[in-house]
Length: 292
Ligand SMILES: [Zn+2]
Image 1 (tube, rainbow, N blue to C red):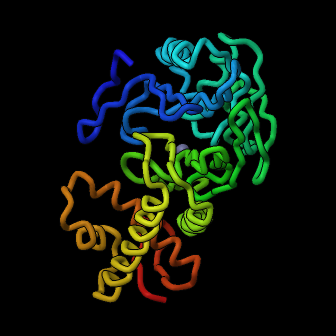
Image 2: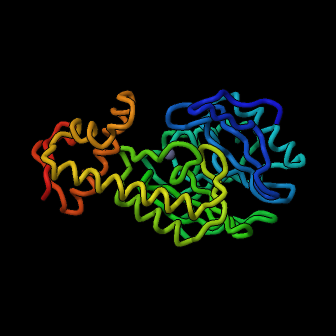
Image 3: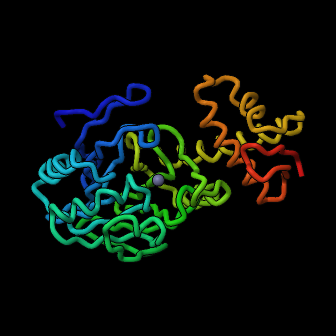
């Protein structure tokens, strides 16, 4: 807990190693950036001499000494096995180098061939409802696609807490990528997580979220509000994504508008799948949009 990672966005700094509960130690992946905030949180979970490692960072060598310090901080423990929330590179990317350093470890995730095969790890398939146990910790997988189709969140039964992966973040908002993402599916995943009524949320990026239910409601309300604003912009006769962004994000700096264009595109694609809007033009970003 002596060093901190570089400040990123809103001056946020997090310790490299920290205890977030009696059974949760966080080790910060040293990969700050636009999509990762202060970096990817990796978690040692359990209370015994061997702990589950949840997520692995992106594979940069600076992470390995941080992980070593986290194992020491947790009481000179070892890694029992690796469990992954999903196959994006900042979560799976560190698995190979950790195995190289710490020896053969099982790596469990929900398979997603196109993503998994880019990394030199053999994946043990787990899926919705599966449970991974360590002394003092029971992790139950909840399939929550939308940000990524293989995405699993994990309920930590002993705390009623939730490891939310990239579905709920401690900083910023979840990106719905063009490949493997789907906003409508993501919204259903948020509803599913709210039904779990989590106490605390341990996100994959950013600080611990003390009131998980309130944060989930905030996420759900925010997306609904945006959807309403996009529909209102269409009703006002705006048809291009650029014009819709200018209206909906009028209060935000122009520098954020290109990211906002993706958010609006996702909203429109969701509404299109629901049959509520239509478009002229193949390419979503360049199309003319209208109410169906
Ligand atoms: Zn991700």
